[in-house]
Length: 160
Image (cartoon, rainbow, N blue to C red; front, top):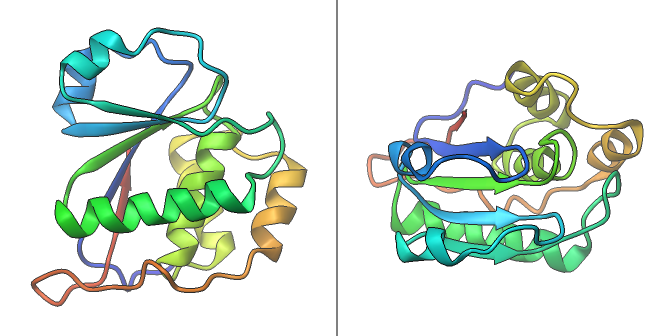
């Protein structure tokens, strides 16, 4: 597995959103990316200063190019502006759509797709279906997330 990473990308996987605000605050989440259809009101979460982004795509399918671009831009901006911050991402079961986005960030950060899949599956057993794995295998990174933090360390990832 790649070990050339140094600073931290922190992603929090959520199942269909039932996580208490305390858990979100514990990890310092300021942004939630919801990739399934909206099933809850975001008012309470937003009152706590947590921004919710709705980027739904079909269950079992890869994301659109627009969602990939938006996701990678978000990751780049958030981790440059606030190194060590945490982005929460969720779908319904937390096994397909959300892990695909996190895998894309890891691949763009320099991980091989196999390593990204293995890394995510250590925390989310059963993550990815065959269609999503094929998408990740064929995905060609543009190295949009290859940057160093203020200490000269390359990016890293922690998944909760």
